[in-house]
Image (cartoon, rainbow, N blue to C red; front, side):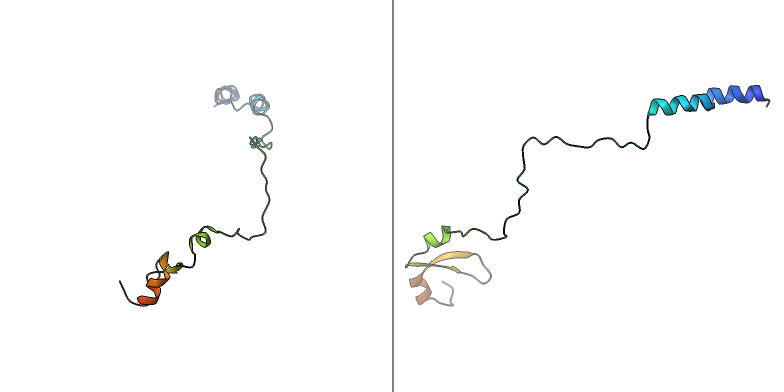
Amino acid sequence: MNKAQHEKWLRKQGLLPSQIKEKKKALGNPNKLPSYKVPKPYELSNGIGNGTKSADTSKANFCNENYAMVPSYNKGPIQPVSKMDLKQGAGRKI
């Protein structure tokens, strides 16, 4: 293969130095990263609380002198049980 044929092949493949420079100009700076910023539709508080939970008074309002909130079964959920039932059947299934 002579030099002219080799240049023709390089031109066909797009590998001539002038063609490579044009491709680099068209692509721009390869080290520049695109911007991935997302527009914020609303302002965020980004505040962290003190770690305490506000008191839940819904159970306290339900429990009065006639009812108590106790686990009615072994490892069961807490349920309102009348204090009369606690006195009569403490420890037995009804």
